[in-house]
Image (cartoon, rainbow, N blue to C red):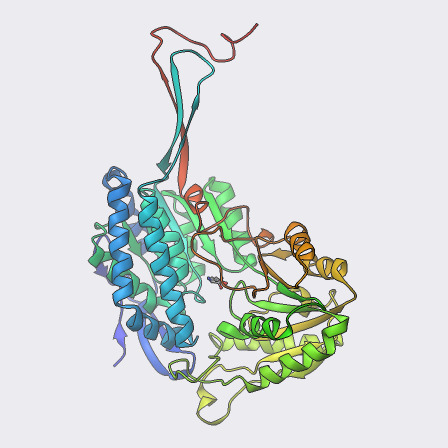
Length: 496
Ligand code: UN1
């Protein structure tokens, strides 16, 4: 019997008001029903936001180091339950255990980092332009924050948002992706056990169109933090524009790895395989373009095709499996449609390009690792986010062209270059238009204490993780203390 799961509102597990539920199934085997989750409606969202609003009054007054200690405790509990949560995550999301363990680890890192930040949360002190006057800036919480998260990092991404938000003194309502609600339930069990007070963190399950939209529109929500597609991000931004909510968006990518003729090809191969086919290509940071210098193009393409064909597909809970399924049927159709588009555009399919249904995998959403050759920068498969195990090989004449091609998409999240030439490496750092650049590493592997986000249509100027996430979740307040005992007028008193 599959379980019936609940929302978490005001410190209690609560059924959805409509009584309607949605199913959560294992993408490696759609016959495996994990559970039923509430399809939350406006009333559920309203209750959750109400609880968060009420809890804000007390939570904001708890000293930040104390809030940090609770988050530290959450990190400890995540560490203790890492294996259990990793298994829950692989079952509902499909990526292999090694990767779901990494996902939980990212949550642990984020918890410890946030805990430490509780004793910093630095503002500035600076001299006043007037005598006997003190000037400083401090951070203040915003209020109720709405967090809307995707399914590809079911624990890491919610924690990137939730822990810094709470540390700053905000209260939150999380709407996790409907493909991965079980991991979110685990996270909230942990928050409860760690001692997060009732109402401070609330969980509402449901669809983006109904539950997410209700959260975005809610009058008492001060900020929306969203990770997902650029199309949905645009709509959210428009809605937040109307109500003047702060909005932080992390959206699509079309990340490229450049391999120059002087690169260590074996190292670059490991990076490309991991970047393109890790998480079945379903990372915002996945490598979906391989930009190869013409001198090594033939050799390197053969190397990657050979490796792609050897990747073992299957259920991620089997430790010998290297690549799990796509998240659902719709995602697989999209990938397959893009393969068709690639062929029509004149790209050459070297391997893959087909649904994988062998043996017992008939009931999962598997797709073969796919490599296209003869891709040109103008093709749709070189410009649009596919979010699957599809790699487009583009040949270039030299460094300048490589950078131009890399920059030639509407996105700018992650990027990578393999070269042994230090001057080229630094030029790449300077000239690549992306939020993240790796030298001799794949496009994936961002660490919790560095800013994460992208330029152009990938984001709207914010950066999660690092110290920068604390700018998203706090308001700056400038404070002036005048101890001169008389009226002092800035600018005016200073006039010559
Ligand atoms: C994402 O790509 O959706 O850099 C998030 C990485 C992870 C986070 C990725 N630390 O691959």
